[in-house]
Image 1 (spheres, each protein chain N blue to C red):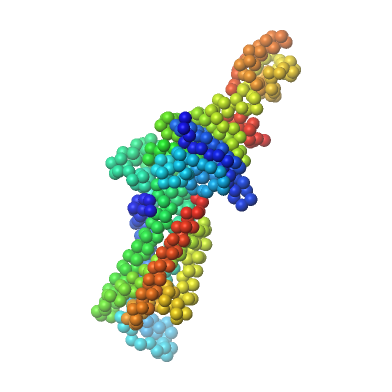
Image 2: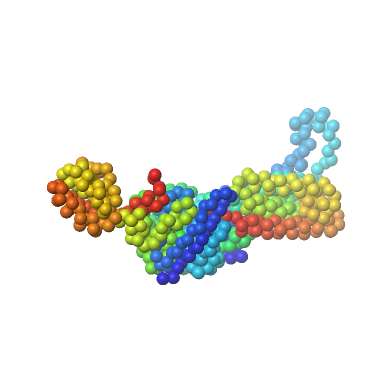
Length: 258
Length: 308
């Protein structure tokens, strides 16, 4: 992996010296803060929207801290993943189109380092932003519902980071393969919906990355059962992310650059 | 001399299109080599293959004695594309420092080298981001980043195409100054640039080298034409008739000005000696005789049919 350190530095600068440093963390913090408040005031929102009579017809239990965490988990697995895929989809092909990649790769930087530097930086930044959101979720939950444990929300977010790593790797593979940004983003989003579809099959949800979103929700709400159903999706998710990155490297090594 | 670049029978096929068709190229170490061709002739494709950015279909290539694009070669090569791309948030200094880090240069060496190159390319006082650069500034920055590692081989694709006359002069002087220290291979369709700085040139047409060699030798290959004579006499029509059957005259162009003919000749020195006698023999008055060597443009047009 020639020149991985300077490339990681370049990627980090590319995030921290552009608008990107604000987007993902801001979205995470926004989801974390508003999700808890919406959970707490769901009934009031329904009454305001539907009127007291119709709202009372909907049976809603009094919200508790775990409901807020469930909301955070849902926001991560349904909204944040799409944003992450959209960001990753343009990482490689935009630099190929603009000629940035050609100038880097005619210097002593290998194509392996080039792809992996993108992957490491995106995954690390996404995980950091998500954990920032998790902490905000915990703080707001504690403020709204009273003292709440930090462990479940952090653990759920860590498992979500594995799901994000899988989808970032899929988007990078598409970004290495396709010139068009829309094509790469579409492939990444397609991977997300494929995982969601496969999670309907119980055997796949228990033993493959398709179950990661379910595990995130279960950990956040404290309903996670046996260890096996946690580790198999997580480990297979990490393996899948690694395989997708290896494929991205192989595809990019064969790609002709402008 | 040893070869910095040695290419033999290079073929590149995209779908049904044969972009390079058995290209042979030999670039001597330490020379300034002009790679000339019309748009679409295959110049950029050749450079991309030499840099390992694109794969050959068949043929053999050695760059500095190694496979193109190998790690050893990339440490010794500098490259700038015709429209170099940079991350838009970077300043010129960021670009050069980032490039230096890829070559594992020490911080002290990086500072010194970056300072020198910013001065050399006139970007030392430019603090703005690359996104606000003109095309000429981008090209100058591209050349600076290609020089950051003091390369043994500098490959430039149309390096002066976006520069103003002053910028062009600076870059051409820079390339000329590298003669003997580094090998410079640059593609261009600006023939005066090549004439100004190149030791050797190659002309590519439809994926094949149609001629290559030292500049003077290539000029002399213009269909046997060594040059032209600009002749002004008191009666140009009579001179035209008088020269019609002379073996040393290849062609007599239409009058370029009243009383003035442009003769294309095979041997410029011999023609310059014979012409005054021919003029006197026909009782004409010779007002001007101006020998002109065949330009690279003559050769280029003659060999590639460009402009026809």
